[in-house]
Each structure stands twice: as C-alpha cells, then as structure tokens.
Image 1 (tube, rainbow, N blue to C red):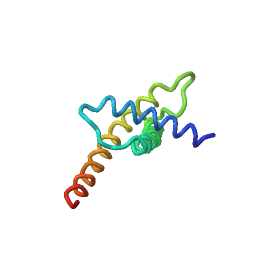
Image 2 (tube, one colour):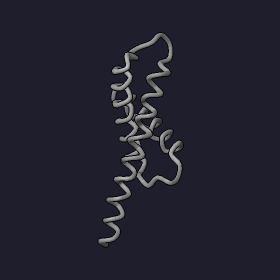
Image 3 (cartoon, rainbow, N blue to C red):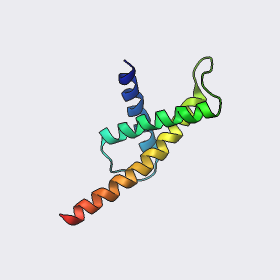
Amino acid sequence: MGWLWAIIVGFVLGLLAKAIIPGKQHSPLWLTTIFGILGAIVGNAIARGFGVEETPGIDWSRHIFQLIAAIVIVFLGDMAYSATLGKRKQRA
C-alpha cells in the first residue's frame, strides 16, 4: 500500500509542479510522476533536516518542502529530457 500512495502523491506533486512552472514542459506523464515521487522523497528529507518530521494535524510545512523539491526536480528533469529528445531528433 505504501507504493500505491507514493505513486499517487508523486502523480499529484508532478502535476502541481508542471502547473506552476511557466511554459510548456515536454516530459511525458509517467516521467512527471517519477519526478514527483523523487520530489516527495527529497522534500521529506529536507523537512526532516529542518526538524519538521511530524506535526499534529496536516503537515503543511512538509508538503510545501515536497512541492518545492518537486518543482525543482520537474524543471531540471524536463530540461534534461528536452535536451536528449532534441539530440535524438537531430540525428534522425
């Protein structure tokens, strides 16, 4: 059940990150989901580093760290995807 939640959270975080980043992103949905999962993992690690491991109620600060990490990872990952996709199209 933990993997299912990771995929759902990654999907939502990836879509939110894509919506926040200006311009068009070229990465496919499955890759955006993976970037979102990575953003959740990195965001949790950063939140733990700041001492926000668990709070009573909804962990808004942890979710903000996750979203910021997902935005950065989706942005950089999409740049890398576009760069490799562009090189592949030039060869063809």
